[in-house]
Image 1 (cartoon, helix red, strand yellow):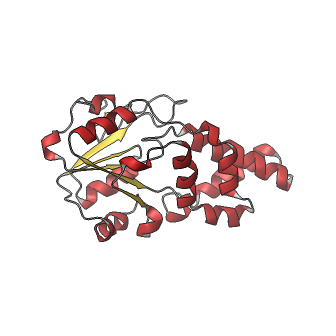
Image 2 (cartoon, rainbow, N blue to C red; image 1 turned 45 degrees about the horizontal axis):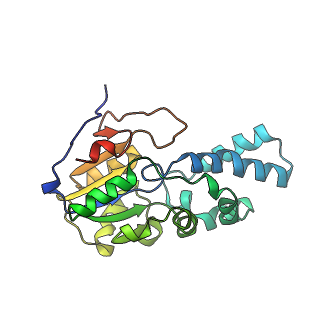
Length: 223
């Protein structure tokens, strides 16, 4: 059973829209390929580690800091892996793409007078690469990184501290993200309007949430 739905909220009840970046606005294929293939291949070549063993090692290493601030900290990974992660990201920046219907959603939000905020775990160096490729910076009233807050979005502390950076009414804020653990934390904090993106990667089949209104892309939210 899924909760794929149309018109899961009323625009009259929304003032601000918080949007995740990776998997929500941008195709997560870039990130999946980067961490699961490109970094593994680069590390394997540099350290002369057999590719299969290297992949298993890397995935376990990633898992050890999943859902923490370190997971998306490029400086942390550069030091831990002995690689220039930011430079590697630039090398495959041609794979960065925006999801279908995102720009149309931006246009609709603007016409309805809603303020858009990018609320992301992406490291500032990652943002520099992605927003340098996909020119959407100007649509946001503010860009907020987990590095600015001091906690990852999966952590309740992120949401508790977010009002220190940006004031908002949690009863009149819409938040869209592709990660259920992030939505869980936002829900626990009290954000009322939550939407799950079921198809973060163009290369993978959608997986609809059983806990949140869930859509493949932004098309059902354009009304």
